[in-house]
Image 1 (cartoon, helix red, strand yellow):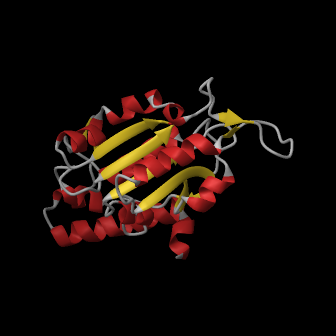
Image 2 (cartoon, rainbow, N blue to C red):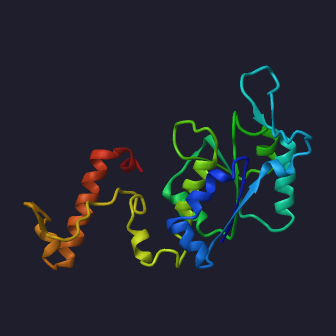
Image 3 (cartoon, rainbow, N blue to C red):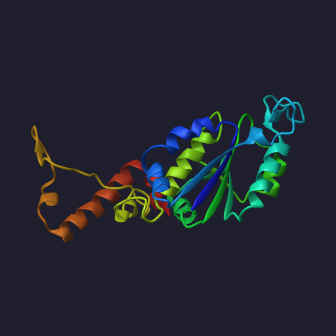
Length: 225
């Protein structure tokens, strides 16, 4: 899998991709993540990549030219399964969408900044718009980091125990059940007896019941589907 990210702040993403799961995927040769500085594509002599919006609204908008040229340059080199724009008014990210994206070969992400990108770019190039929540960040870089991490951890071979990812919250539409590890009794705080029983059928039933209970208590909206 290859992920290309267009951004005006590539330095903001170096840290997240140099640690943990994404780093592991890159080192194993299972994933490539390439950051592209939008400023390198601008034809403005002052290297500006933003301008005031038509209509007199407050704020600034990322200009069409540098992003347009950057996308065309990248698309001339490979075909992308999805061109994703990270934006607060996009589809709210869900595990089902992450599962689908993890099967892609090439993904291009565009990080907005200020008031976003020129709508003409969205109309011409973007195939999927994603929001990571109902709030506003300073730019799309952190959202791109979240989405990249969520995708990469599902790429076969990145996580040592691939079954672990399949039992995470949301994979079956429910939150994950509580988890415990050794010791079984820590200063009087005990692990539920069923988990120590060795009876796999009972343990599975307990986990299913706990997952349903936790979902009902914390995210009942997930059960409506």
